[in-house]
Image 1 (cartoon, one colour):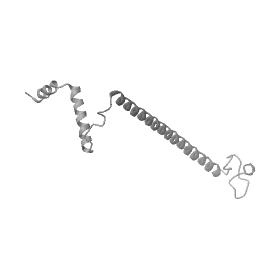
Image 2 (cartoon, rainbow, N blue to C red; image 1 turned 90 degrees about the vertical axis):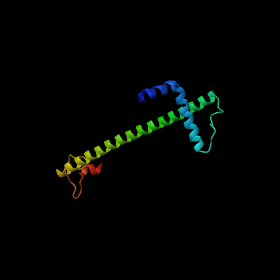
Image 3 (cartoon, one colour; image 1 turned 30 degrees about the vertical axis):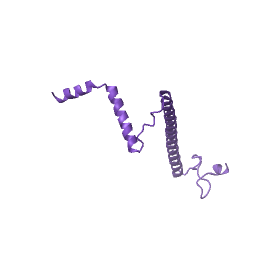
Image 4 (cartoon, rainbow, N blue to C red; image 1 turned 180 degrees about the vertical axis):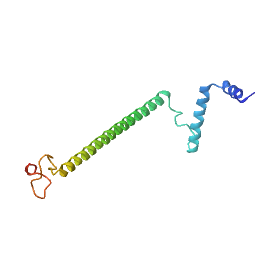
Length: 127
């Protein structure tokens, strides 16, 4: 008998669902025994109570998932807005630099400097 046949014969003899249930129960009991509690705390609950507890956990998970999704959407919008503002700022500074290199007002970018020691024109100074 080769290894495949041996494994197949072992698993055929037990119901897969029963094996999984036994494994889950053994894992739970092992975890409880390591924590000092050797009794299953859910043993005294009826099926309706267990289902209610499970649905409450699901509701909490859904609420936390919604909060996380809203957080990431807000973060994405903030990041996009920040990138757009940075791009606009760099663009405006480039326009100001070009205007000043041509001797034009840094505010309106059309009128030449007409005030001594100032980088804006008299029209923009009055506004």
